[in-house]
Image 1: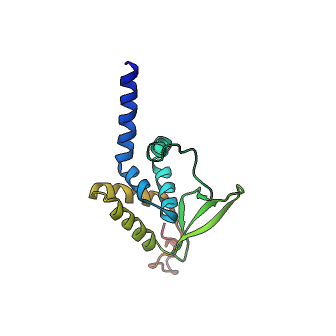
Image 2: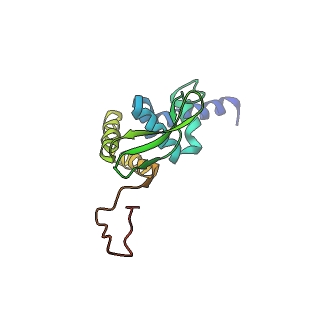
Image 3: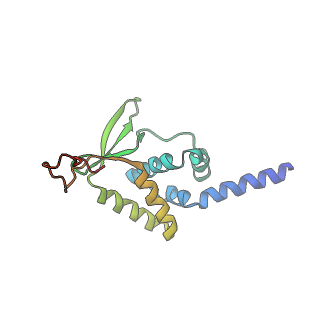
Length: 154
């Protein structure tokens, strides 16, 4: 493969990454939504994150701090928490959303703004679901008299 072919191939791959649903979302997301999206994508697509970020944001070196550095967990109240890496390098557990409905609405609005197709939305929500690694809400069907009952939903 000659040098021109290599250059064209690399350009084509960057363009493909920019136009992927992940690239569309990264270009569209801002603020807390962008931080959550970055964490969701890093959790599910770790192997392509650096090339994806460099394709979407030329000159990208690393995420700005503070940034999310863990998957999410749903607390017993239904609130969603994750660890945040602070500017001084410390990690702190922080409230991200008050409920899973708030997370779902935020991601749905982002998908709308990015004009994702139905199949792209499905892939996004599969990644979001995978990002939430634990659910500690009390099971509403819990019967304390049943010795086989599970106390937690998951």
